[in-house]
Length: 122
Image (cartoon, rainbow, N blue to C red):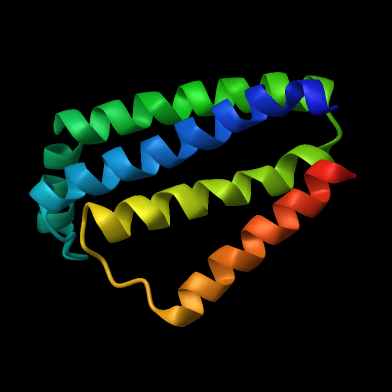
């Protein structure tokens, strides 16, 4: 199973990249309103945002990669690795988007990393 770790990590990185691209795109689109007219307008604006579009395309690549992984590796081994996408996205959010990552979030990230190492060694 360990020979598939690079493919699993590719899935993780493309998943995180998709989240980052979507966030970057939505920063420029702005917040969605739940009013029907504004929601439709914001949705169209989001769909034509290049970062949102690229983020959705990246998600497709990530899902295709994940399907390949699932065809070769136990779900109980592969799926926990996806939590590493949160680690990558949170680090990017902290350093690039200047988001607050407090000590509780940092502790959670450390636990995710520790748990993933345990699973990888199994």
